[in-house]
Image (cartoon, rainbow, N blue to C red; front, side, top):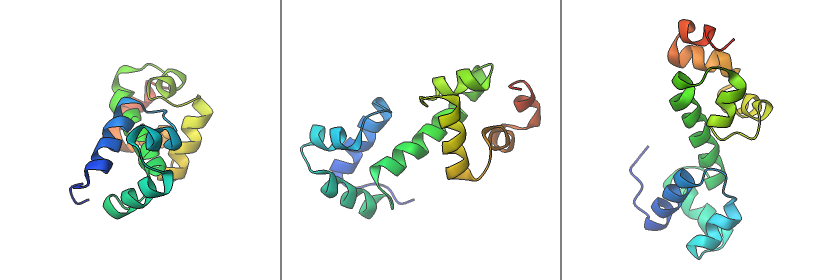
Length: 116
């Protein structure tokens, strides 16, 4: 991915990092733009909209916190998913894998065995 150059998009990404559950409409309002303008700028700079980036970032947090969390239910909460079912759905949509298989491929089978 090319470096993001648009200041509005950079500011939005920082907000998404700090407030993972923020709604896109609230994000746009906070930045002083309309949702369509924010979405257009995101697509131009990132390749997809702010909601899609938020979903990708959440799965990234899943990987980041996976080493420190003892089970899937706690892992889903630590990564800012609404529930374990939400985590399973999001991971499957974005990766075509179950969370266990996804983490197994990212972290190795010995790690994932401790989650089950």
